[in-house]
Each structure stands twice: as structure tokens, then as C-alpha cells.
Length: 249
Image (cartoon, rainbow, N blue to C red; front, side, top):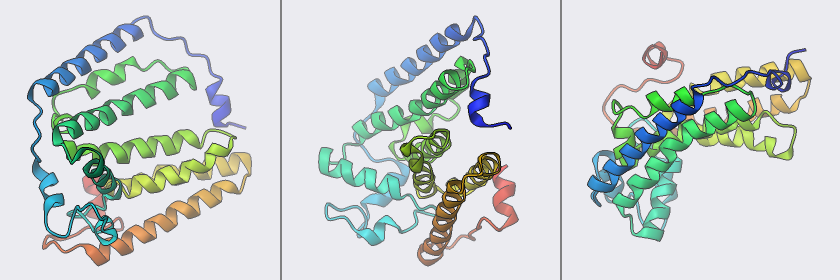
């Protein structure tokens, strides 16, 4: 019966140019880092201003603000991150840009480590498009860490489910953090639930049903919080609305 463990044993030899692709990707990432070193300044930009409004970010953490939507998103992890930075570094936005960049490059690194060490799949190519300047805002805006949290937690949730250790319980927790990091954590629930279903039918282990129930409860909580806190005038689209999936795909 096919399982992730069996897939992992497949031996795929790395292509000869894999290391060259890693080197090119590293050079591109180093170039972006140089640009940040030269031009990053300690000034809030774009969405960061919303956290500086009255009743928002404060040293005495406002729990209601944590779960309040930012536009149509619940960015709980980003708000906690900003609060910690306020306490530790007085909200230095230049430093936050560099932390955001670290999380940005951590995503392809985590993917590469998993694919190459666990599945033996060469993936140096992943760093080339990821280092593109097309999405420069993901590199230069401190607030874009909301996206990186969402994607990184989803990836970690999928990776940690591939283990028989106690750390496997972290898998649904990572997915819940992804959901409460940005709105497309909600569509991410679909592949995760399908993965849990696949593992349940192949391994006949009820813990995967438990994992599904945890993330579904997170989804219900997210919907209730979003409904109660969205105050903007634009039309909101929820996961059961076709427009959400048309936009996503």
C-alpha cells in the first residue's frame, strides 16, 4: 500500500546542475539583501500604519485587537510579531524588513530540505523564480510577513505529518496558525484535509481524523471571528462563495 514513507525511499539522483542552480539562487538572494542593506529605512509603510492607529498596537496587548480583522484577513501571528517587536526593539521598521526577508527565504529553504533530504528530489530550481523582483513587495515590506507566516506554517504542517514521532501533533497546530496568519490559510485546508484522509485510509490511524476535526474547528472559529469583526464597506467573500475560488485559482 502506498504511503509517504514508501515514496521517500524512491532514489532520484540529483541533476548535475542542481548545485549550480543553488549558487545562482544564492547570488540573487544576496543581491536582494544588499538592496535592503542600502535602502531600508525605519519608516512604516502601507498596511503597517493600520497598527499605529488608536486602539491597535500597544505595549499592553489588546486581545480584541488581536482577533480583529485587518481588511478581510485575521492576521493574528503578524500582530503578535509586531507586539513582540514593539517590546524588544521599539518597533524598528528597518530591522523588521530584515526579519521579513529572513522568513521570505526560509520558505524555499524548508521546501528544498524536505524534498532533497526526505524525498531525494533535486530542487535547486526553486530559488530562481523565488528570487524574482516581480514580487518585490514581499521582500521590501515588513508587513508582508503575514504571507510568509501563512505559507511557512502550512508547509510545516504538511511536513510534520510525515513522521511517527510525538512531534506529529504539531502538524494540525501549524495549520491552525496558517489559518490565523492570512486568509488563504483557509483554501490551504483543502489539500491538508485530503492529505489526512489519504493517510487515514492507507494507515487506518484515527489520529488523522482528529487532525481534520482540529482544523475544521479552526475554520469555524475563523468564520465567526471574521463575521463579527469585519467593518469595511467593501463586499466580503467567504469560502463558500464561488468568487473566492475564482480569485484563488
